[in-house]
Image 1 (spheres, each protein chain N blue to C red):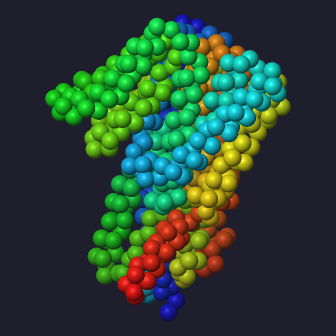
Image 2: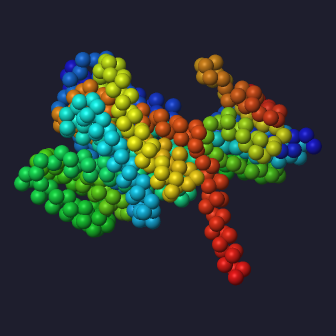
Image 3: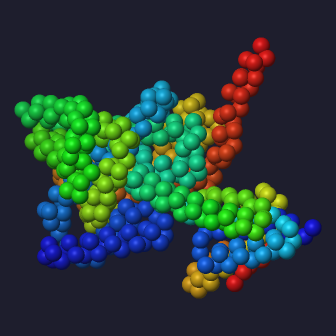
Length: 140
Length: 389
């Protein structure tokens, strides 16, 4: 069956919500299952105090805990099996490596269209599309 | 420039640093240091007395907070490995950097000692951030590295307090009050905080600050420095804060909102870019004087106690930031180092926060899941063998 296992990258943004909508719709049509990968941004690098690191970590844990609950609730509402994986690191690298690790059939991710950053550094979507070993759907 | 104009610029810079930090995910302290460098080099500013005073207090508060972060149980569990790694991590760069500054660069005895202390540190927060982000803080190796970092920092604050003491009659009350606060405050804390705590007027923060000011005043009279008793006082109160996280949070809020930005901005303001540019060779020598002894000294012990991640452990133990800046700023304020020497020391400290961290994460970072599985495996096998007979 095509697209039996879908990986969707989520971060709570509008773009990632659109990607999640599309992934849920696709999974419902194909009877597939979803892994939602929540990519936590990095903790403050070269911190001067543990308090600074702790605070950001707690904030991230709370935010991504809520995000994971929301995804589970929406998928369960549609009767779809979902696994939520929260990991910290570089978004494009993580998405690509988790896609490989879990042998997914399709990666779904949103495109934010950040003009300056995209032109200077290339978007996460571009980099995943370039490096992923499976098809990639970029939702605009 | 008037005091109000400078205060406005500094608080605006502190606000900008916070926003940049949130956007870029880089430590606010590093950005404050950078903006301080810009302010100090772009404007003709003479650092006013009030800023020196507030920055000195902020340094002691930072030290107290660092002590309060110590996980005493973890330190006790890992004392053997952590003491060995931590002491070598402090002692080797201290001796080499001080010797390089004294004999190699011709610095004065006091300036060389400041160089040794400033470059002996390991950054608790830099190490902690790497370990938490990679979930290695849950592994034995991560816990061991954290405990060793505490030991190194204890060596640094002890050296800063002891090396520059000129014994006089005030040393006795300084030592006596230090011991009384360290022993007494944890005992009265539960009663005091239960009776007066949890109010917007913050009696518990005032108690901590009053204790720190008392230590600073007596330390000053004794011609010593309050960082050692401040660190140990934080350590003594760490168990209390462990169970009263909100108190610790409020203390952090006061410190990070107003005090520590002034500390790092003041540090940055005293860095002379022209002096740095003119002394790039000396910068390289000092950087090597920190990194080489850290690498050579810590690596054999890391191989023994943190195998198979000796390189990762060694690189993390080579980082530095807060205590290095505190030591350098103390040297500048006390007239032990000049502006060029201070600029060089702070530059090396900042480089040591960035370079070893990047290399450790890029080339040697262990996988936390694999590490936890590896640590669990022998115990599982032993348990099975035990069951079998």
